[in-house]
Amino acid sequence: MAVEIRLSVAEVARVRLAVSPLAETVLGVRAALGVGGHEVYRSWVREARPVLAGEPESPLLRALLEGCLPSFLFPVPEERLPSFDGELAGLRAVDPAFVVAECAAALGARAAGRLPEPAVLLERVAGALTRCHARLVAPLWGRMLAVLEADLSRRAVALVDGGVEGLFAQLHGDVVWREGELVVHGRRGSGVVWTVEAGGHGLVLMPSVFGRPDVIVDYSPRAAASIRYPASGVGLLWEQPRPTPAGLTAVLGRTRAALLTELGEPLSTPDLAARLGVTASAVSQHLGALRGAGLVTTRRTGRTAVHLRTRTGTALTGEPSD
Image 1 (cartoon, helix red, strand yellow):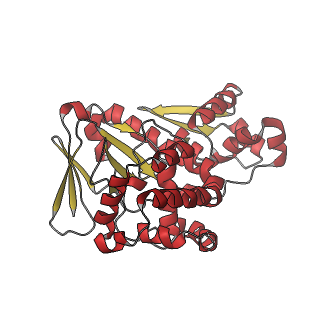
Image 2 (image 1 turned 60 degrees about the horizontal axis):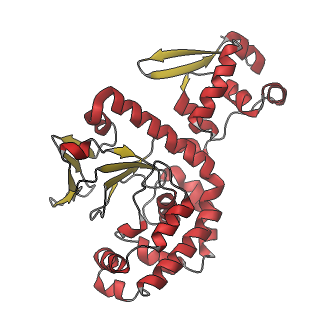
Image 3 (image 1 turned 90 degrees about the vertical axis):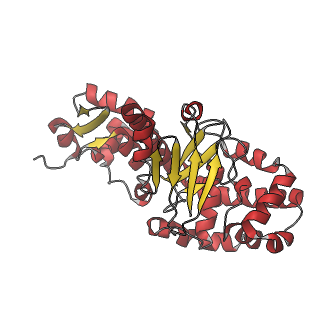
């Protein structure tokens, strides 16, 4: 099924980018349950399943996540990077009538009728997601956030360079922009088209680690329309950084030594942030120091800065220079 999101000129001006820790937890749990998912995080799923097997609310989570996804589990952030606790508080405060309607729409009336009443359901789900976040997502969240923020940086550059049309053109192969309508094509070509009105609230685009390979659209937005798309660079989460010489770490510090080790090949700031699991701003700060010491050189291509270590930097790593 295809989804058409209709955007007025004013709503196009309200397109923004954000990250949702709660949604990443929900989608991570879904992947660990064996629903959807992608080969890229197979190793994480293998480690997560025994943990999830000990979660007392696993049957309830499976009932909610094994089919269509109720949109109350996916709040649209009001800021670029909300906290998990803040989003969880919002989940607990969802209107019970909306919970009932969403469960019926996603699961069917019969299955929804077997769920606890809304207040109990929300409390049990919130408790389960708190435990799952702490054990499955939080230990990896620093690296996940670096990947997600690197993706946001790339989208921001695409928006500056090509406007909204350029932003949507690079978002995902299933997403097509055509004169005021954003069309998301489903993987199953049923010929059915569902129309979503943004209602004057605009559109929020959210990269996702665990949403791959799907583009997830909220069919019944209560505020801004939303699209969750697979973040680029997710495979870097499970790559081990190159080993850094201990002596270099002692002299330069862990992050600068790791940057110098990685820069045997040309890399952008977002790429480095994703590889090392630190923010792009931190990478920029450390690169400035390395550049000032003559260890790194930076070349700009359009709006993208690409970094590479100098011969002096290579000599410090102990690796052979070309």
